[in-house]
Length: 282
Image 1 (cartoon, rainbow, N blue to C red):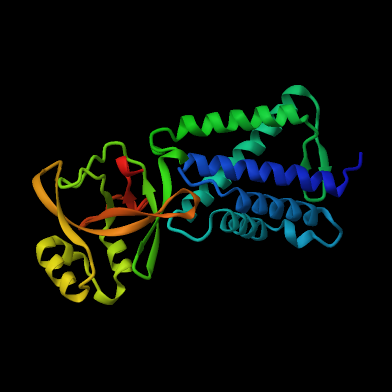
Image 2 (image 1 turned 30 degrees about the vertical axis):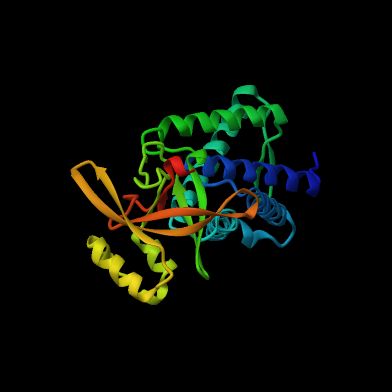
């Protein structure tokens, strides 16, 4: 039985893309389809190259691990969540391969041995069913640690003067912080976002523990800055104040809209999974 390179490329590209999408959804990562499809094609090209004459070195374990890391880098980019996404992707791949092997043994279809490993001659419907089963198993195993789906997050782009920042934001329906003067929803950001929006001020974390003093300082340094103090309540805090500034938020269609962003002196995410809360402002 012969297998053409085009079929092997398409099959592996489709499987890799599916595994990347499932990994992203499980980890609450935004789906970047172009990057994921490109990464899937890279995986398919590697699978073809590994079975060609002279491709023995591509089947080495270190090369396989390096290729998996490269595929995830193309799909997800370099971020604080890269290693977690890569680990989930590799686990999904191992689980998928194990389920396919079990399916071939149970159905008696056997498998076609190629120099690069085993190619399993199963139907497209069987592959889809195995993929769905794989996703269900991983969701069951990791349901306790994976709390948010991909739809719980969004990319938040803010502009203040000539400076822009791009943040990963959690759409938190429990965040009901509003400006008491206008009843406008308030975005809650890590203090580090303010340091990036106002780099000349060289802001530090401890500066945000005293929002009133910080506001007076920033108003002196930036006469055009529209800053105010927003009251808030939280668990363990009867009442407090957050420094907030008027900025612009990139909306749908690329149009910038007015927004009010408040800066938290403590991280809004304990594990660094996101840098902002949008809540009702989403």
